[in-house]
Length: 402
Ligand SMILES: *Cc1c(COP(=O)(O)O)cnc(C)c1O
Image 1 (cartoon, rainbow, N blue to C red):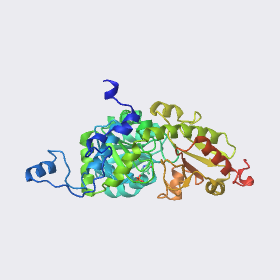
Image 2: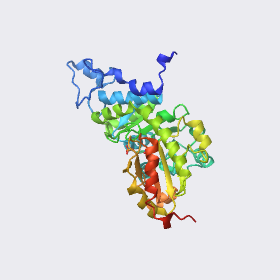
Image 3: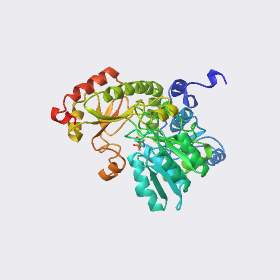
Image 4: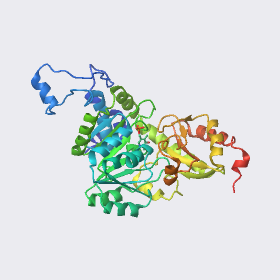
């Protein structure tokens, strides 16, 4: 295959999927605000409705703008098919409820996203689905749990907010020996930094709300994989109705054009900031897989092309130090989000794990005073200077290290 048939990720971010819906010479994909799609003759209508001919019938099922977004992400993930959702949580819950039936067992880890953890602990057990949540970094324990029976292996890597890394290739092999379907939440890494399908997973899903869209102005979710699996998940969604809105699809599509540029900048910036934090006396711990001192650095380096824009760190002086530090940052939104062009800071107790109790957070190894820092596309030196000046707001008595 020549270069032109195998474009790089930056070229794909811009062009993939775009050419299918250009109207009257427009260079941009139109936002098709139409609930239904009409046909002059009944035969064509029927063929489209039965899926024998391409086209759209009703907006809960499919929409032309939404289809372009699905196609772009599908190509970026190197998948055969994709289907989208109103939010990331809709993608996750619809996927799990499509794949699991009463009496079956799902294996996952303790530190999945807070909402995902709720699906595992609160909703799936009500349908008699057995849920086994393992220690996230204990690969042998996960393999042992898989061997005791597994219909679905659900992974999220790196995890939010402590950036633990799971071995996708090794765990996929173990799951496939049991005939399980392997699902990976690739929200934090994005297809620029990690390709779960190439590593052996069957399905890769995203909260498109985060890095894919990148501008914190639209919610969305997407699942990519082989056609037979995606068709089943699409069917569940078309009936239960958590459909992506065409306007949101357009915003996500526009955001994704700069995905490769943004992620490259965020990878570079995050690594430098993590190194700066690690050397700073006010900081007690830094969680970032790109640090050579990180226990999982070798694994992260093997399965990721970049380490991503998300990190977390703990301060000496506990929550009181956090309360002094966070309000003083100038270039950071204090908000429950991540993956945007602006830097965003939060504590898991009010962001990713607001759905969890303090006890549940403790069980997941999330310190109450942990700060999650999602690096935007600002100048790296400006961000470091900003953190530096905010550290001076921490009262001396708190930062006196023992
Ligand atoms: C935000 C997030 C989700 C949920 O996505 P929504 O679009 O908010 O529903 C799922 N997984 C991860 C890793 C996330 O960061």
